[in-house]
Length: 127
Image (cartoon, rainbow, N blue to C red):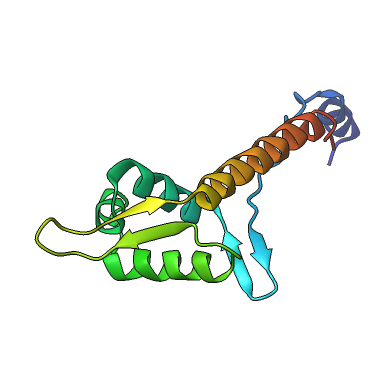
């Protein structure tokens, strides 16, 4: 390789690459996952639709999967996050409890903190 060609290649400056952090998190208990993004979205959908089946439909999720996630969240908490009513002539339904509302708020607060940290830390990533 000719030295003039090598020198001219080395003198080319490339624009810096703007790296950024991306990440996800879960809140876990000793028994396993308690809350994650999908579970919180399920809780928010139960709040909006007033039922586990309505929330599952909105998320294109099976009722069985939604019910299992609700049972898991309720099991990992000292107090239930979702209270369900038995079906019947007027139909059933589900509501988010005060503990469920607090869980949503806590998760969204930690999510904002993590996003702020990643944005701030991303500014100093350079190679």
